[in-house]
Length: 395
Ligand SMILES: Cc1cc2nc3c(=O)[nH]c(=O)nc-3n(C[C@H](O)[C@H](O)[C@H](O)COP(=O)(O)OP(=O)(O)OC[C@H]3O[C@@H](n4cnc5c(N)ncnc54)[C@H](O)[C@@H]3O)c2cc1C
Image 1: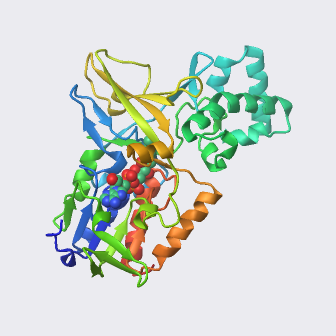
Image 2: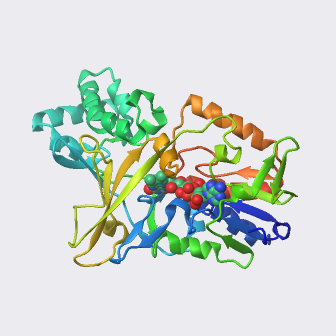
């Protein structure tokens, strides 16, 4: 890496997930010479997909479904791949039954007596006219006793234990924005997302990233922790690469606390232990994802054939996700997955951000760098906007 002459690059991008790859491609399109560095052995960040020996294509860092209402983001991605329609559906194991998640009228009818289901449905429709979905917190705190009791039931069965498993803290300690990501649906729509655009790349995300980064102005460096060579001089507000001041653009998409050597303490994340299992059978379960909100230690099982639509007989691969504590992540050198956003952690993040903001040629973008629970469409959108900002030299 010492031999790479950074002075000849207009931009150094750290991290080859969506945040870094979109920035690298956009800057390259605008005639800049870009080097993109990732510490992993592959591009794609958490979106990376690979083929297992049995031929099944799996998402190595957990299942990733593209869904958005942002047409501009989708149009941008279509430059690098064809897409097929895929509407994600999830079942959850509740009281030994597999019911649609988000909880909808079908789930209600499967778990309640016919009379109770009718009474609850009517109360919901009367109290939330014209609404397609409501927050569980609005149901649980509702003045109508029927709705409140129903809300408390769903909260207990779908949210309380799942949240404790996923986040490692009681549900009360989790930011309400996280709880509100999964609504209750007032109808029979059993899709997990209701966005207008729901597609998957025809040959998978890795293929899409390969095309995105295939540009004569982009140099890719893998298996390299950029922080071995990139340092911040926080006295003079400079970026140093191999001990020399770097005056080009630097875009960082990794964990911001690492960038400043944990100066204000580690930012907490949740991590995952991802356990893949192969089976010599056509299918393991009846749909792509089954959530286990209650007794089991894992939170969900994904069966990839449903996502990739591969037609392989007598072979399938599943993934069980076991949430892990941040300390375990540190000890076992696991990846940070989910930022734990709450007031205390956001304030800590802002201390890091204030420091970075003083360095005029250093930019942060992405799920780790911005410490936000972003979906991929938001990350792509942010990355596209950042490129305009860089071009206009507005920080
Ligand atoms: C389990 C899980 C499931 C998800 N499912 C969905 C979904 O279904 N739909 C959806 O829209 N979104 C989903 N997301 C969110 C999605 O993964 C992110 O929004 C997106 O991948 C973020 O891209 P990124 O580039 O910011 O981060 P990443 O993809 O994490 O990329 C960051 C890259 O930076 C590299 N890096 C970090 N530090 C350094 C360093 N010092 N030197 C070199 N390289 C470094 C890392 O190795 C990594 O490759 C999910 C997230 C998780 C955790």
